[in-house]
Image (tube, rainbow, N blue to C red):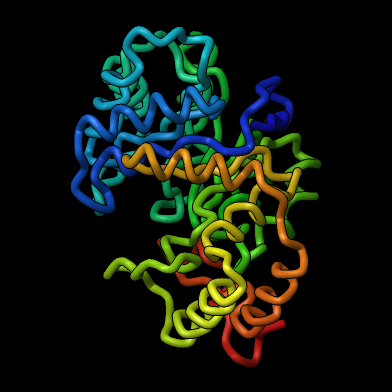
Length: 320
């Protein structure tokens, strides 16, 4: 396992981190014993950062982590959670809820402090509230020692500049934007580095788009995007490679991304991903797959409030 510095935080995170969203049954029903074992396997294999949220399973993910982490020395892992989103349509970024949310997360997971706390899916609310109320409340908690580092997470790329142009952040977490299909996060790296912000990437498989598996019903990919990714997967299969392996290896190869968050309630998936991470990336195959995906390069969808999306989804006339 390799480790990289997270901005100016002083934390060195493993290049693969454990995402605990699956523990909240966000994607499928889970087997309790497997879910708990997946956390232990991740730690035993060197993943030293765990990412969760009260949104995942509406508290279930944090509760199960509290069970899984019992008896494990606190200095063996860094722990990050989020606040502000608690159900699909329930958002509360008020200062009062910030205080309550941090305390509840600490109690659920049975820890004395959180290494990272992120404002979750901020594109669904007014940016001014995050800047003027949420983050200041979170900074006060940081001063108390309950939280070490503060940041934001979300889907649109514009939200990060929107916040950082007005205030400081320690870290950001972006998902689906540094993959074989979409590399928009890489374009933001110079700006983030200039602000001393630690960069965390998540979802290298783009919600199964870059796998051989069926897409979940809620996936927003267009038919063209789906068909193009199927061609890429078939090309990899013909070369004897799982496209998911190539996607994972590609996402962690960029050293500007401190860590890549992947998660599963199946410990065998965790083992497989760590094994893939330790194998060399086939650069020739990457070139071939990127060419197949070129017509949909940097395709994305609109998420959250329209005013928090300063770009539009790529169309045929926009693509590189």
